[in-house]
Image (cartoon, rainbow over all chains, first blue to last red):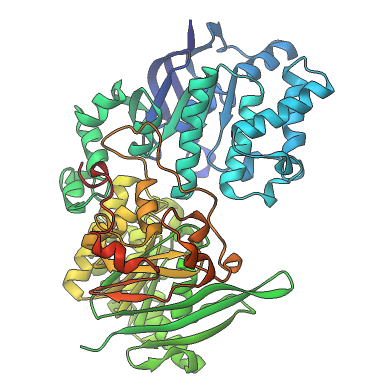
Length: 278
Length: 335
């Protein structure tokens, strides 16, 4: 059984021209297909405007695909929900973690109350059961009881992101979509969160769709990778192959852009002079 | 040649809550003309505050001590007029988010020529010509059209180049660049870094380049300064920064990066969390997280020691250097 199957996903936005008259269509995602097996981790690599966040939003139901289908746990979710039960089930099966937990956590809700709400909605646990599950969840992301009563603003960036991951785990989802989830973290905190994500996947069998522009991070947490450019998949394969032997010119350029000793930034610009000042 | 910039025992306190709390502790370094110093550290380590203190752009209520000397002039005792001149002509500043620094309702052309026309009494046509030339220099095609556009019509990378162009128009001796490429895509980052590198070679401009990315820092600078909890813990030649750092924090920071070339079973973590500058107590600020710490580290704060071209704030600097210091796993070095 697959965690996620996306087939021929397309998303077109209508862009209003000057004077609100002339419309043109902007294709944000163009015929993207992928499958994520249970417990697997798929990396989606791309720069701004590549369509990676639009894909995350379609997966989580925040955006409807213009065409194509999405199935999670073999159940189609291309059509709008018909019942609150169906909406709850979709929420339980797929959770999302954003780049900046400060804007996705409720600033007036303590971490414990936030987890409590998810557990009440998605599980049959009684009060005592929820209480012990909250402690278990906090522990699994390296937070403790004291953090349960903290508001998001009282936590550091890394702690907030861990709280967001605990919230995602609370529903026991089949897949978690992580949209640039470690990009805003300091290097030492990022290391902690990446290790945590690896452990959690090994322990719980949750699958990841991991969206990032950082190739080293993609190497660390994914098995397969897609490289997106302007809404289209330009390269795909096992993460190792994509990063060790990139076939597409764009993937090669992304790799050449990563600063390493002896790095020459001119080589990156020189390779595609036509695009230099785009 | 005498240094362009000398920072000596610079300390800054900010009002946090009811009290003044330190955010920068006794930071000292020098910068020669045409030299690039990269300042590396995690958030809250004091990188930006160091840059702001150089031009005395501190938040209201801040207190500072120590001495900043720019081209022979004491910045601390400069008059308002001298400061204005310093910021407008001698030191250019580039920030992370160009959209926050460029007025969105003015055209790019007005933004670029305003200072030339107003402060330097240049004629409009001449200022326009200069702006066209400098946009070409930073790699922007069709500069004439760009000058008529508004900021929202330009991409982030393009706007950052406009920002760099505006700094170049002032022909400063020093550029303070605070995470100038952090908000940009990697390929755009490479382009902006290439532009900065060219300009530095052609015009011999000195630069303080602030970044959280050690590898980027090593790739673009002559020397790397590493900050932790408001202290400058290590300054070393860029060529050594990735291979033989002496300070345990620099080493730990390098190790905790995921690698491009291989997947690690687990990334070596630095235990604990980064300390805020005001939390640092009597000993070495990194001691609670340091795997090389000895008794003395908790009791006594190390003074920076000079070792060849390096300056290291660590009690064990001598012995770590003698032992060939820390070869950081091969994978970190070679791709």
